[in-house]
View 1 (spheres, rainbow, N blue to C red):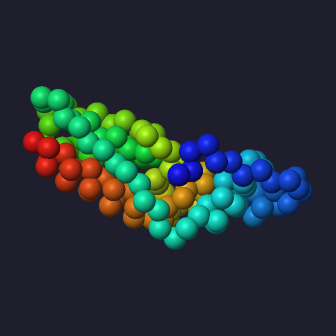
View 2 (view 1 turned 180 degrees about the vertical axis):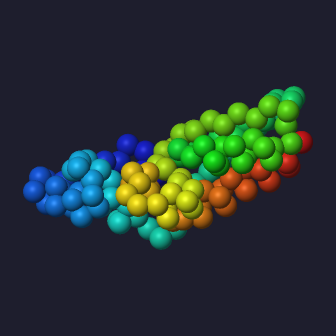
View 3 (view 1 turned 135 degrees about the vertical axis):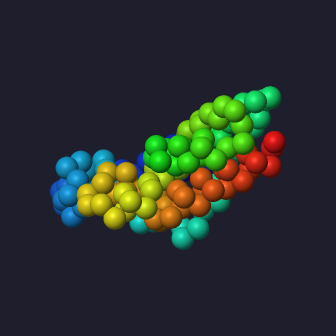
Amino acid sequence: NLLGRIVIVQDLDSAIAMAKQYNINSPYHAGSIYLRSTLPQTQEMTIDCVSVGALGFACAPYEMFCESGVFIKENSPFEFTFINELANEAHGYFAVKEAYEAEDIYEVNTASFASGVAEATADQFVSMLKGLQ
């Protein structure tokens, strides 16, 4: 659980050097990159889906790119589907594959997960929503 966990870099010069390595002008964001490098190779995460009549809700414990939200809504069996981000826990950004291919994207530089995870999770949300109907 990363909720509430912060990395404090004691040496400002080291933090600035780390930030420059990733073309980031903020020691705070350099701390985020350092935190990502210390995370385990796999993490468990709970995603939730709920339905109320014609309403479907996808509750994600991270910030998703618009492409993922649109994919979920377009493939949901519900008349109306709502996306609730940062629900229950906070796992950072889930950037889409195209963002990983672009250069110097903040959400990728500070992401905790690899390319392809956003799409796989969006597929899982759609599967769960279909299971609710």
